[in-house]
Length: 84
Image (cartoon, rainbow, N blue to C red; front, top):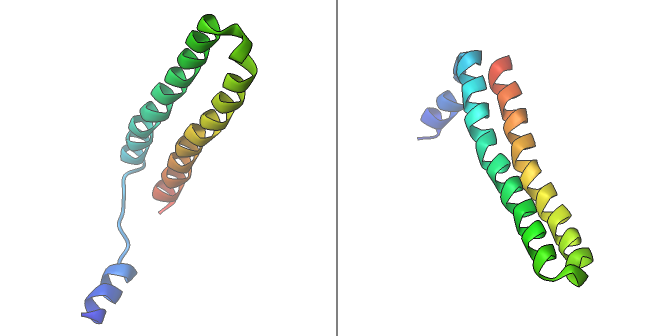
């Protein structure tokens, strides 16, 4: 069983760089939608309760960073896949 796993780990997969770019483009759609929803919620919350803007902005920047990390991970995976 361990030989099969070692052979699978040693084998390399050739991935078309164009296919990797399409995969990254599709993977970037999620964070793009997420960022739009985050800022839409901040605008909506500030319009409803202007005194809460400071607290909302802190939460928004934190969630924005977490969402953008997903896009950056996708970018790193794209470069790894296209370099192989």
